Amino acid sequence: MYFALNQSPAITTSLYRGVTIRHSSPAMYRGVNDYIEALGLQTYGIERHDPHAVVRRPSFKFQPVIDLYKRELPALYGRLLRDEGTLLDRHDPNLFDKELDDILISLGERIWPRPGNGSRVHLRKPDPSTRYPDHLIYPRDASTWAFLPCFICLALTNVLQDKEQHAQHHTE
Image (cartoon, rainbow, N blue to C red; front, side, top):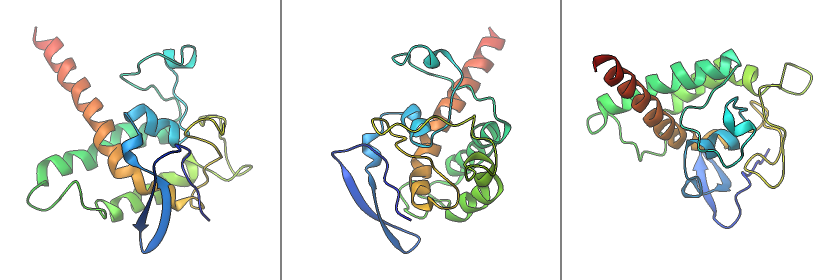
């Protein structure tokens, strides 16, 4: 099934696992919060009450989402930082295909279940005027996961900055 992220003017076509898909250009996403919105992940910080708030550290309450954001994605990003230029290329369209498949097999149905097959309270309510126009369901919306490598790089830049600030704060 085809699923397009709702971010109008720049729709691009790409090949994802041998299937041509249309999706919004990753360039249309300004930061990690745009990807979080596109994935339908509900955050629990000040942004719930102030849509203009700048979120530096997204807060999640659902353990599989926390595992994805705080454990799985940092592990991939750390591997990219360690091996880029020798074994990995951040511009490779197949970057982390197998690893992302494994993560999605493990967490996908718990985070994006079919309605009635699990709780969806940790997900946003779909809104056609946002980057989350319709319910995502794993594995139905497989083409949506194509931008996860971009999300990894942005999300983990935030996580690493938080760790650096935390370490710096404790050494002062």
